[in-house]
Length: 315
Image 1 (cartoon, one colour):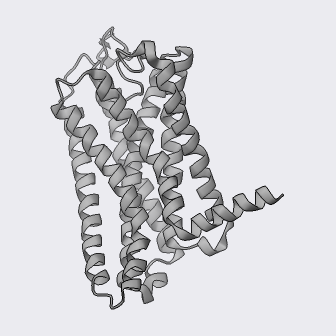
Image 2 (tube, rainbow, N blue to C red):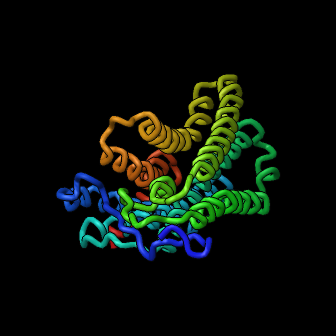
Image 3 (spheres, one colour):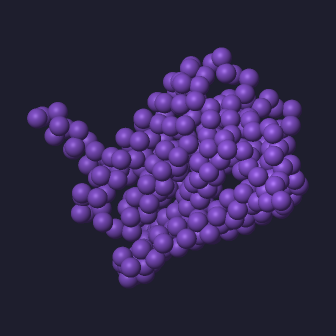
């Protein structure tokens, strides 16, 4: 299956094993995963509904939040339904093209989420350091352009990953020892050298995360300089509380991503099922926690949720 007339050939289907070594426990593992997806789906949908229907939330901060939760919703939906099908129905087959689509969405949406965090950090910087010009700097057309730029960047950086995989010839082995189509796991099945694939993935990840984290850190350094100069304690806590939910979401996302990277690169003695579980949690935990974090720590959203629940109970 390596090549035909010099043209790379691909298997018609791949076999996803789920979590290697823990096949006997798939049903039990599916319970927390399914619970996480339910929380993710309804939590993000509630946040989107509240932002859409409540006119007082039609501001840049909440527009960027809606981008974040929409990205989380699509990301979890691109991975978890197939994962649950493996756990529940032993439906391990996935078509080659479907595998490429899933791989594309995983990369694109991860880049987009990181980009949204940068946009949210910029919004908080303008709101605290230059509040009088906030509505001018981040007008609706500017927010729309930023959202399009985030989308274009994610697509532009992820499409080459799919082409790099598609150009590879594959051998007879079509078993992916993973629960979703990850780039490196698919490339490992190729009958040719995958150095270009590895270099591209690692270089792009390093540059994107390096730029985004640097920009976020610089934004918060400048925010803290302004916050610590505030004359009253009340003003200090009010300014800092507006950043609390954003900081929590950033830490959850980047700490899990860093932990996954370190275990994958330097944890050769760690069992494969641990790598797979950690990679799954990196994709599933942030989308679940983001609506919880913003729902609890953002006063306007929290009060609107309580009002909505109270109205339904009174009826």
